[in-house]
Length: 291
Ligand code: R5P
Image (cartoon, rainbow, N blue to C red):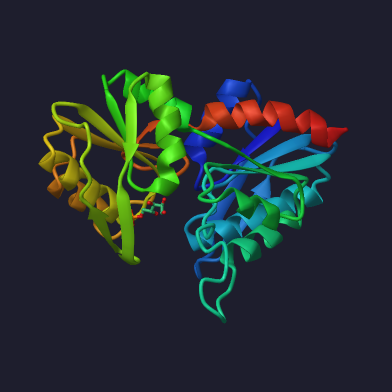
């Protein structure tokens, strides 16, 4: 198996190669003066299983991925597995209003063109896997995050909304502590309302866990509620840390004690790697697609 890491997944591809003890392919990536992307592979991969790792976010990284796929396909790889540590556009997973594009479907269909299998991590909704026209699977980084939180003596896990309850439950069971969830109402893309709810958080070291931190509004409102209720400390953890629109400042202003995310998107808060869950899934899927 050979691993080709794209420009949006350097750390996670390296972590994956180390964990699987498989080589990273050499490639030239550059941009022309007009900013168009260029890919050239340097190794002979004819007849080999190739795993392309590239986070499909932000937009230019999707075009980079399509070019990498074309190069690998044209070099006669035996199988092509696409690892999308973060699958951008996956939150627009249906028509919320008439006339809208189903963004997740569009991106999935294009990625499927030169792919035998697709793997992604903690998708916002599992049904987006059905948009790929090749077998697609997901894995979860929650146990890796929970392991980190356990080392920080967290004794209460919270989901910011009911949709994230299962994630909080799984992390709490790993840590062996209590969990609960908050009531969230989204007002618009960057504003949310957290309805106060009595929690057993007084004096506790709380971790709020979600799949994505985007503008940080969900977490900031949740932290404020928790601190009001007497939590000793509040950390926030997610798989995909986008941190857009002043999210970091918002979280710090809300008196957040620690921010934790994985390396599906590389940021200063990437304290744990999603490589472990991806490696486990790859070992199961590659023999299956090869035969
Ligand atoms: C939405 O349901 C997701 O699970 C996250 O809660 C959401 O994307 C977080 O967005 P933001 O950080 O902008 O509040």
